[in-house]
Length: 196
Image (tube, rainbow, N blue to C red; front, side, top):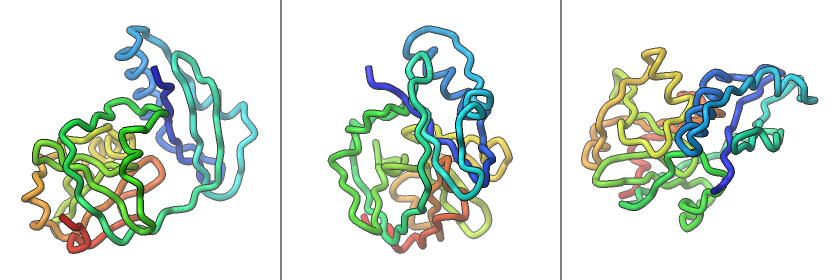
């Protein structure tokens, strides 16, 4: 079985959403191994030498235990276009280190892929998505992986969850790509830049 990982935002020495990452780690291990464990990410990460300034991505690799932690400087990707991909078999319900389900979709610079499964919008190769209709942000109920930032925004009533079919996309104004490193306003793309 592939190792799992969490990507945690570290900005100017502060870790973000640790409780959401811990919860997903605990749930993943229980669902995959039938074992109940506890992770104390704050204690574990504070024992490491971490950068005090700048934006960094912290990659926590684990199975039943944390096996490795990598810290790298984070640079936001520039994305101008999104292409829809129909894939009825794609499955990424756990955050596996092995991301082979995405490997055949090589990202072209400044482009990304949005997966459509059974006619419904899911995620991109590296993020959940949210759509803006001019009044509110909506995130699809049919995600591949329930991201920590997605869940945070749902809990804070920033995102409304709804079915979003491929045929619904045109009624929105913008799409946002969100993940542990990206907030709702970080990558916002005009809906006209989604190519079907």
